[in-house]
Length: 247
Image (cartoon, rainbow, N blue to C red; front, side, top):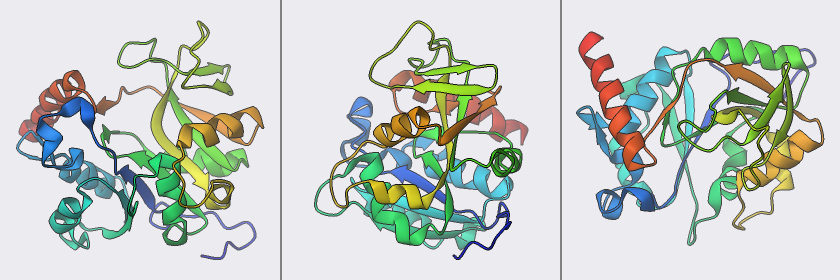
């Protein structure tokens, strides 16, 4: 997609890059023979919950970045039409290349701007409002943050008076009361800084973008749910089961 001057992409135009290629070792033995996205939660594969939510929020294009046992996900989801989506696929290849490497491989499918989400997270948020905030910021990238206080995972962000000051997943500090919520917006030109076909953690790129002032923060006030750990999976079962019952 060629970006015209002053063009503000609509929610339907911006694809979601959904990173779902990891080994999911924390969920073994469940994930010994199925990928994490296919783990059953509240009676359905988790990927169904994710994609249905995105469709109801106004998302229309999804690029699934797959690796370990990813063919099972593609066989289940297909082209996405049954869920009201246009779904395409990008694979790690012969070896896993990490979250950053997976995005780099998918860059030709993502246009000028994309969302970046993780394949084990359920984020019931206002995607349109976040996209509007991104356009208003003038930044090249935006990270959603949540005041986690180390409750559901280790906090890794310093966010103060609306400013994203520091993001560091490897070196926690007492001032880090927020966490990377797991929904980011990124101009895909930034992905060309990632070495092609090499293992690379997206956190490294985000750390640098924050340090260089190219990435801004947007605070979220609704907690996230995830299935990356046994405790997270148990909480997601309760939450999504309740949503299924209440509609």
